[in-house]
Image (cartoon, rainbow, N blue to C red; front, top):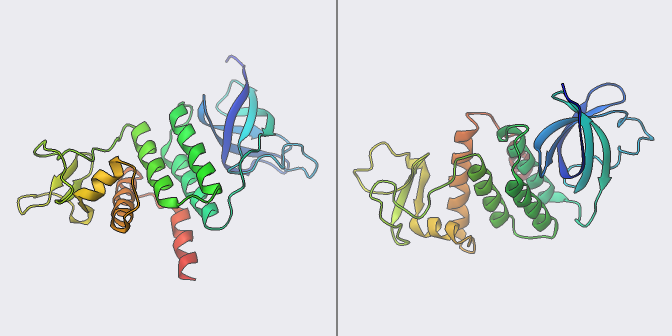
Length: 242
């Protein structure tokens, strides 16, 4: 098997776990090579030069080599320029990471999704409202996975969505006007036409739009997760209860 060497890759650490007493396997999301596992030899040693750099949500420049499924990390430099996440935004960052780990296939480049992820982290770290950033990233993720959303056209009639009407969202099809004949639709995905059009316009200033768009995206993501629970969401809900 050919041994390749990659240098100068923009990347973020999504998850890391011990490989031995001294090493880590880090699951990274790189701009040009997608999500992949890297073996960080010696990264658990107290004096390791990589130890302090392999943090989640920090923009990195990585280099690696190898020909197997798990490549060997050769370089990890922190690029800076982005405040570290904290508090509520830290939990939201873990939510984004968990979506990528559970939904994004390995070794599949998604540069536009990488940019959307980076933009979301930067906005959250600078105190932006989380609703627009989360919904924007969730839509980008589903689009990159081939599940792009239809929001402004009635999936049944082909008519444009009207802001004053009510709709129910059929998963993998789109919105359908909420009338008595809408048999087979999932009533839990009821949403106003205004919310759908606001999502198209990336406008989350309305409280109802924020609430309905959150519920819609939660149902769609749960469908594509095929029942796999999100630990970050559970932790966030437990902390809110406290």
